[in-house]
Structures are given as C-alpha cells and as structure tokens.
Length: 173
Image 1 (cartoon, rainbow, N blue to C red):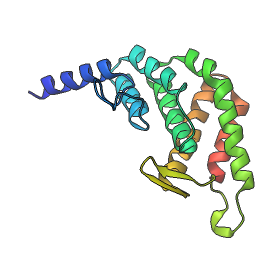
Image 2: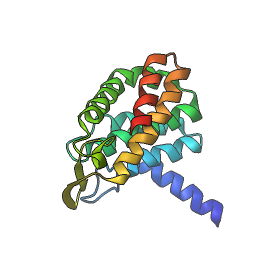
Image 3: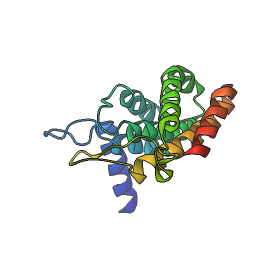
C-alpha cells in the first residue's frame, strides 16, 4: 500500500510538473511548491522532470516576494546539481543567477538604517494573501540557504569568484 501511494504521488508530480494543480483555476506555477517538487523528482532519480520544472521556474513572475522566489530556485538548482551532476544547467543559468547575486549584494549594501535592519534583504510582500511588506524570516532564510548551496555548485563548476561572492553574501545575511 505504501509503495502504491508513493508511486501514485510520483506519477501525479510527473503529470502536474510545475503546476500546483490540474484541470481547475489553480493550474498555475506555484512558489515554493514547484521548486520543492522538482527537488523531490531529482531525489527519486527523475532528473529530466526536475530539470524541466526548474527551467520553467526561471520564466515565471518575480513581482511578488522576489527574494523568496529567487532563494527557492537557488536551493532547488543547487540540490538538482548535487543529485544529478548536471553542470550544463548551472552553466546555462549562471548569467541570470549572477544578476540575482548582484541584486542581493545591492540590497545588503543598502540595509542598515538601524542596527536591527543591518544584514537584511529588503522588505517584501509576506505572501499572496497577506500584502504587508516585511522582513520575512522565510525569505531571508531561503536566500541564505540558496547562496550557500549555490556557492558549492559554482565552486565545482569552475565559477570560483561567484562562489566566493555568494559565500560572502550569505555570511553577511
């Protein structure tokens, strides 16, 4: 019964791929669920499905909670690389991810109006149903994890300078 349930969940994830749901108004890309589902697909050896989901994630809206979304994708890409060894996706996405790292650096450089705000990324909307702009622990933490994780992937794929920059920013965050 457990093996059948697991198999059903994997099939569902392969059918849904990046969609939150299928056949209803919720048939859309969802953060953080879709990058997390990609990580699970990679853990089960379904790298082509995971890769497709991650590539799709890079084409989606960043207007709301940008840092959180970027952090989620950094973590998922690093985990995908660790599990699959697919350095091509890291090389292909690095130009975009380099811009994200630079943006995180700008935000950290602008932080510090008060002692409590130093070392934090900019405030952003809390969630889709809570419009308040906050220093969300969830977004700060996932960017920190993403910077640390991608630093390792970049070190292994020959991007030592970017790896060092990511590690330094993670240490400041």
